[in-house]
Image (cartoon, rainbow, N blue to C red; front, top):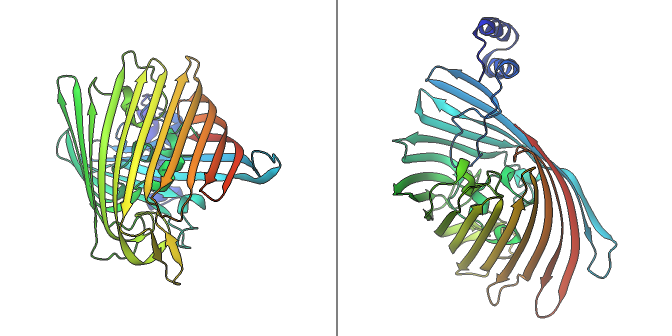
Length: 412
């Protein structure tokens, strides 16, 4: 990174005149960006702060303060047919799917870190489930005891299935799978713990959380909590640039890399139909979720597999109006394969299915997608396009349709 110390006093003088407080920090960061722009790359994750500067606005004070400021947006247009026989348009999707602003760094000491992520699009705020805007996606502080062990307190993603923990900016398709939509754990408020160990070249990761079980941005909870435990085994060593939590092999791993994992979560008395997600319920339900997943990469080839199983003591529960709401219990499967060329064109395919528990009012679902991506600046700036087939069926009826989507992701 280039350092132009000569300009720093003038930058600070202008900032102090124009704006106080936080706006002063933002302006200083913007001016510094034109002078100090890092060309390094780092995989964005939602489980820790990004301490090394990576193509974002960065303001620091020796080793006692660091603020990274980043944004990203996903603009898309899509179409869905009425059925596989009737190709007339059922609906268009044209919107800003995600617009995020992220702050992270450390305060006082590099061991005491923070991570804040705010959402500004309607879909990102989960407005349709509960009728209120949930702007805060992540707000958590971490303390690092050493390089291997750290804990967090606040609101963040639970250590659930790999695709959910992946940042939405690191996905191969515009959206996560239908299996993820049905059985993911998502975000919650609580205490988090992370440990990473190594035996020879093998890497072993342990992750745990005790959380409210009610999801993000709640005002109060009942006496039921959620308990989540995840273990990961990387027999061939760590992925380049944390690639086990980024879809596609953009690092072109020179040797095979594999990560396998298993998660169990017990959510007691949740008031959301999907645990941390879904529609509000008038009474609590208990959910047990099992997840197994793996990520494999080698020389441009990448494979992601996830299996999820959820059981509940109820398949339906009443909402505040007394209407019955379906509880998503059953099994889900998601498989993705991709190949990336050296000029960063990627072809990828996905198969995903959801099979609800016997007696559930929910229907079976299937999804097959074929995508083509062009990575301009890794996952930061990319063009994504896919076409595919989806169906929803039970013993009485079947609905199926074709779909297509084009998405542009832009961020720093």
